[in-house]
Length: 277
Length: 287
Ligand SMILES: Nc1ncnc2c1ncn2[C@@H]1O[C@H](COP(=O)(O)OP(=O)(O)OP(=O)(O)O)[C@@H](O)[C@H]1O
Ligand SMILES: Nc1ncnc2c1ncn2[C@@H]1O[C@H](COP(=O)(O)OP(=O)(O)OP(=O)(O)O)[C@@H](O)[C@H]1O
Ligand SMILES: [Mg+2]
Ligand SMILES: [Mg+2]
Image (cartoon, rainbow over all chains, first blue to last red; front, side):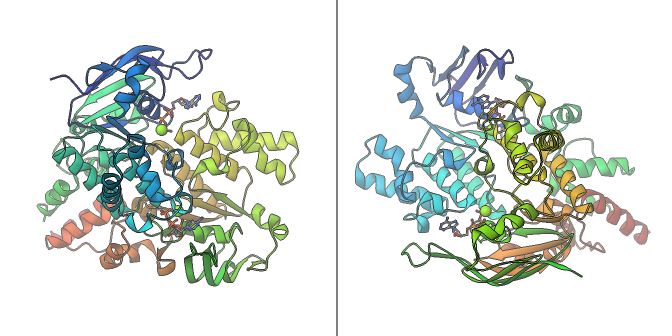
């Protein structure tokens, strides 16, 4: 089967005069229903990739295909973007409606969805993110985390085939973060929604199918999280941090303990500790 | 000891007397001493950002009073009287875009020092120093602050505040959007400022940051202070954690996993180091 996202030999720069490319001849693909984490340091080009895939920016060279249809011809753009839901890094960049409910309804209105269906979809989406009680408030009068939740509702209400989350839960409290991740996981597993998640939270990437790591305009890793976490040198070069359990495993090794040489998550490491006694 | 900041029975209502009015703080009383490193945590919408904006006079109490040094703020306070306060209290907003406005990065960071009376060369020197501390490369100095990545914007906003050398530094989720290395660097800078006597008040959802940095943590719940303790005391109270949508830091989670397996460590570990230390200690006791 064809991949749902196919990026081929893509190069991009914001300023044509500036010699430095943000993205330099990158290629990758995502299969339908995959959950992919996109990581990299500040300024490495993650949000730029998100906007390119969503058609908000156009590449200088290379192609992006969604469901095997090219993004470059403008005819197709609008059609294509229907299949993509993008949650921006800053939720304020996304709000258009006067109230929370009308904001979430905006995308549906644009697609001329009948009013009754629209209403029920908005309700479902706002309930999923725990913001139904705020439906009549102005987006500008919400707290940071409340804004992020509404922004997520605005994307999932469209039932996109591809959901791109650009640090979409960075301001949520721990419980809300967990709840939103459960919502996303469910969309991924039950509806086979393809997820492209941009995050600095290494623990979140651990649960994805695949990690794409961006550094110095190139993709320098494309593979399973458990494989990535063992590449300590690569991680250090990327200014990344190891997950807590991996740091702890390293501390045990440094202190002279005889511990497995492969990656373990928190639970596995607790079990290993228990056996010491 | 000197109480540097006192909030006394503070209430705050957004849009009072309108149908949309909303009470964001209810009867909040807090005393903060010089040189503390205080974290503020709590569910989204619990009033954290509102609370910290009381301390630099950006919002004024609807009822009650806030005292910072010898400056008093209540609902009668005139904005003109607050410039001394703004110099004393530096604030990094939850959304960095909110505090960026100049047409270049360098000008943006130099704005504060200039505004507080430095001449241009001094202001520029301070700005360059602050920018290099937070890891913003020279290549970005002449760029518009709005043509930056999210993490770069955050760094510029932080630089703009520390360039003003405030005595009290308020940070509203300062590590959001920073890459892990940037996060560690910024936390290190905050620590260094704290060691030099700067009072730190940090809003965060990151329990590892709380465990590893703060000496005091206040939990907000529906506009009220629901707990005020050391991080170790907070994490010793799983019920309080659950009731406030919080989580345990990884090190503490491991502590409880071990308790579940019948292994009791002497103290709740706040870092990976402490975990290894305590296990080693416990094992030598076992032998
Ligand atoms: N509008 C713009 N004009 C010019 N340069 C830009 C613009 N937006 C971003 N850049 C630059 O492009 C590079 C990539 O930015 P991008 O926002 O994609 O990074 P990112 O990986 O999302 O970083 P972060 O983790 O900080 O959000 C950065 O160096 C940034 O300074
Ligand atoms: N400008 C405003 N007008 C009206 N209500 C507001 C405004 N700003 C915040 N509120 C409301 O006040 C309450 C407290 O908001 P605040 O921003 O202080 O929360 P917070 O604890 O910082 O949350 P978060 O963790 O999501 O940033 C929320 O219910 C919010 O909806
Ligand atoms: Mg970004
Ligand atoms: Mg807030």
